[in-house]
Amino acid sequence: MPTSGPYPVMLTPYAEDGTVDFDALDRYTDWLIEHGSGGLFPVALSGEMYDLSDEERLAVAARVVARAAGRVPVAAAAVAAGGADDTAAAVGRMAATEVDVVVLVTSVALAEGDDERMLRTAVDRALAAVPGVAFGIYECPLPYHRLLSDDTVAWLAATGRFTFFKETSHDVDRMAERVRRAIGTPMRIYNAGIENLAESVAVGVTGMSGWIANVYPDAVAELTALAEAEGLTPRVLELQRALTEAEQRMGPTYPSSAKRLVRLRSGIAFGDSSRWRPAPVDGAELERVLAEADAAIAGVRAR
Image (cartoon, rainbow, N blue to C red; front, side, top):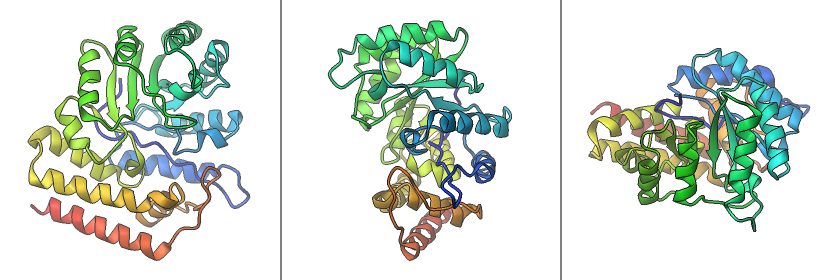
């Protein structure tokens, strides 16, 4: 069962030769867990899932599972070419890595013009392909942004097999309705956005799975706990603003910017390179981002 707190959409580190750096991935897995992650989500968009080969996606998921060693649950996306048969086959391959949750991607399982009802066929085949395996759903914004109807969310929840929903509407009212539709089922809703995490926690969202959790899992975990305990108090909103600003400032060169910030915070030999959005980073600016975020977080903690 997914837990509260952050589910970082884990970055994929690369070695100098461009291959996946599994040693850095091991250290990053440890660091995220030690800094308060409630779970881990490798093989997501931030992990450059579309730019990894199928073999690499499976290897990354399996490595994180092995390194996590049951300390936290691990979710990973099953990326398919599209269609119910391809989806079921991809699910079977990802389930074999022993991840705790196999995640379906709405914008992959359905082509842009597909009727949403076609998702039910793909889901039925996927569930049948791996009995007993828990599932997740991810409204990934690429290759296009497919938000599901509330009726479909309710249907997925009612299967009893979906435990994790990475929600990307950034709309608190919509999140509240989705939480309501999932009551009495194992499904838990995770907000992709830091900018309204506290407000979403107030309506029943379990935690956050988004960019800033890759860099500040500890502060996101703290924000979630404070929002649950205090509601929308001034220090909760101040912490949320600090994390939102840090995320916005790293956005133009993400994920390379986040990789640099991870290196600065953790000391892990984490390269900046990205296959998905290669971009040079401004090291001095990112050091300022880190210093200012650290100062703001320390100020909240001192209250």
